Length: 309
Image 1 (cartoon, one colour):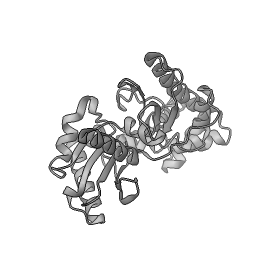
Image 2: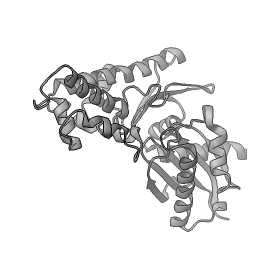
Image 3: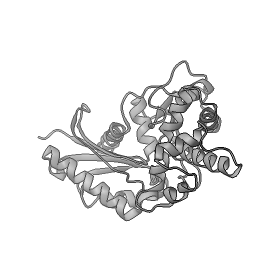
Image 4: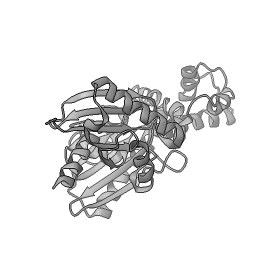
């Protein structure tokens, strides 16, 4: 009898990751591709990319779809709270015999980070959000509204604030040739004048959330070098992020909740992650035990085991 296999699918704001694991969570196949957030690339394109990724992961390991006992999926911009049907319809044609577990990018990150389905997860990548799960099947999400409505403290928000500052400096008549954060932004993009930012922002050949979010590393680097303008942006970002955790603690009445971090802005030591850690009075930055894609596979394994009982 074949051993059970589990697929994890993690679609962040800029990257799709898929992994196939055995019951011991050993990776048998892994794949990385571009953004699949439907709010960024559109629902049709997101589904097509997810399906291509699933087929590629199966092909890499030389597995037939029927070998996958269960698959867990969490996609930024398509939480099971509002897009469960879309998630199921994206996977069912390719994995017709598998137990499918639609989730959210926040929940799979929580399960992976803590190797358990409890606690509070703070995510800051292209977007941002926080998710809490408490015994008694009590769960709550704060934030994660997408880049048009929220996602404060994420890479897109940080990049947008940088661009706004550059334009405000120009409108105020400040010298754009001075060694300011705005000047560093123009140099990073290979532009000579702030007015050129308009064409760069509104070009249609790439998703704006991903492109603008790509400016966040510049702000982080400048903050590390002591740039007070960069630190001002990141202080605001860390304030928004820490407030999401505090809100979950209060609303869930879960003051003792273990805290997990996830996302490209928080999964390494930088000025922002250190400031969020300080604001939350944590002894050190939380380090995830496993990545979200494995969290998705773990969630699939949990739900599959429960369904078999």
